Amino acid sequence: MSQSIHLPTRRQLVLGGLAALAVSAGPLQAQKVPERSGRKPKLAVVLGGGSARGFAHIGVVKGLEAHGIQPDLIVGCSAGSLVGAFWAAGHSGDRMEEIAMRVRDSEIIDLVQGNAPRGMVTGQSLQNFVNQALRGRQLESFPTPFAAVATRYPSGELAVLRSGDAGFAVRASCSIPGVFVPALQNGQEYLDGGLISPMPVRTARQLGADLVVAVDVGGAEPAGEHAGGLYELLQRSFEIMGQSLRSNEMATADITIRPDVARISSTDFASRKTFIAAGFMAANRLAPVILERLGADRSRRRT
Image (cartoon, rainbow, N blue to C red; front, side):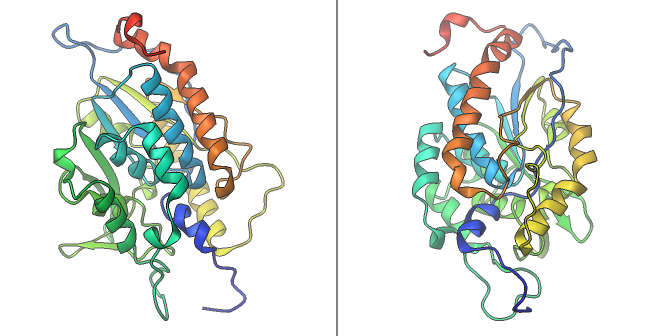
């Protein structure tokens, strides 16, 4: 690799490698949520990608929890798959924030030694980190059903990972081409799910969701932002490439939670506290709407 290429710092890779595409927004939808046999609608929360902005997902979890909202299904892509796996496994928003603030680079990043023709990070440390934190639990054992989306390589088919190794599912969903070496399992390679489904609303529908709440931590880069490093170039290219894909899927969501993060660059990892706070505020604002749509008793909300 040429010495003139600006590689991402290890700190950038720690969190940059956990996300692929920033996601675009769709307006709050007003269609009626169908109820089956008089029961409460099945609620799915879909967490999209967003690089450093993925910290906002933690704030959203905290905001929903503050109102007593617990989804029946969680679907994640890239950064959303990491937060979603921890949430589905039973970690609270507060606990996830604590982990996010203290995690060390060495726990996540394992740089490829020597030449790196297929990626700079192997991804094994990320997989190990998730499995250790979740005590080796398989996806199908989580208290809340969970799915991570990834892209099968080289076919380009969508992979919906719902069982087996939780760490591998997150690793596969986060494997940004050029940054991570493709994740390999049973002879099949996987790349970042954001390549074909940056906001997997349709997957949530296919898994039986009646009401889909999509969390959009995307948005345009701040005016005058011109990131010139290799990681920044890859990240922004994915965001541009996925605009139409994510717009199409966002349009099918029932409710969109959109934290106010567009003013901060998706590679600004120093702003994690700000991202988390923005996520909390956005979820807190829309939680009453979700409760109303679910027909929940407002008196059951936590203060």
